[in-house]
Length: 327
Ligand SMILES: Cc1cc2nc3c(=O)[nH]c(=O)nc-3n(C[C@H](O)[C@H](O)[C@H](O)COP(=O)(O)OP(=O)(O)OC[C@H]3O[C@@H](n4cnc5c(N)ncnc54)[C@H](O)[C@@H]3O)c2cc1C
Image (cartoon, rainbow, N blue to C red; front, side):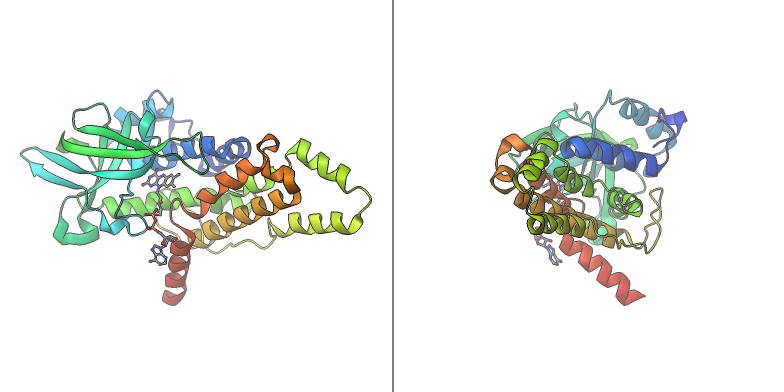
C-alpha cells in the first residue's frame, strides 16, 4: 500500500484490506503475519519516518527481504500502553535502550523492529517515543516464543533491550510522539475490519464465514440432516445471524494519518461477530466440529485473537463510550 518510490505496489488501503481478507480466508495466521509486517511496522515507518528512514527500510520491507515487527505491549502495559516502562536514555549523540516487550508478532523472524520506549518519564504518555531498530545489533535479544491457543503459524514472542545503543537517527517520528503515533497505527490495523465491513467482508469475519464453507464438513451436515427441515432451518438461522446485515457506518476510515470515529465500533462488531460465527460453526458441525480433521476448530481457535489484539473488546467499548459522551 506504499508508493512505488518506496518500493511499494502503490495500492490503496482497500486493496490492502482485500489482500489480508483473502489470506485470512485460508489461514488467519498468514493474514496476521502480513498485517503486523505491513500495517504496523512498515506503516509506522511510512507515516512517521524521515525521508532517509523510508528510503532505507521500506523497499526491503516491501519485498519481504526484511520482515518487520512492531512492539508496544509490555508485561505491565497492554491495554494501558501508556504504562510503558522500557526506557531510552540519552547518551551523547544517541540513546541507550533497556527493557522488554511481550507478545510481539514476527519478533523471532524480524530484521526490523519498531518499538516504543519512554524517553521522558515525567511527560507520561507524551514521553513515549518510537525507535526503528535493526534486530541484528548487540543489545537486541529475543526472549520466549509463546505457545498459543490459535494463530499458531504466526510467531509471537518477547523482545529484550539490554544496553542497546542506537544513534539518534534511529528515533522514528518526533520525541514524545511515539504513543500518539501508535494509536494512529493501531487504527490502521483496526480499519482492516472497518473498511471491509462496508463491503460485508472483513479480515476477522473471514474466518467466521470460512468455517461455514469448510466443504467436506458442510457436505456432511447436508447428508446428515437431509429431510429434517426444522434442523436445517435452525442451521440456516445460525449462519444468517452471524454476519449481521446491519453494519456500523459512522465515520470514515483514514489510514494515512488522522484518527477517526467509527473504527472502534467496527473492530468490536467484526471481532465479536467472527467469534460468534466460529462458535456456531463448531456447534453446527457437531462432534466433527471438535475434531481436527475438519478444519473448523482451527478457525474457532484462531479467531479469538480478534477480540484481544490491537485493542480488546472492552477497550473498544471504552473508546466508543468516550466518543459518544464527547459527541
Ligand atoms: C497472538 C498475539 C499477538 C500480538 N501481537 C502484538 C504485536 O505484534 N505487537 C504488540 O505490541 N502487541 C501485540 N499483542 C498484544 C495485544 O495487543 C495485547 O495482548 C492486548 O492489547 C491486551 O493487553 P494485555 O494482554 O496486556 O491484557 P490486559 O490489558 O491486561 O487486559 C486483561 C483484561 O482486562 C481488560 N481490561 C484492561 N483494561 C481495562 C479497562 N480499562 N476497562 C475494562 N477492561 C479492561 C481487557 O479487556 C482484558 O479483558 C499480541 C497479543 C497476542 C495474544
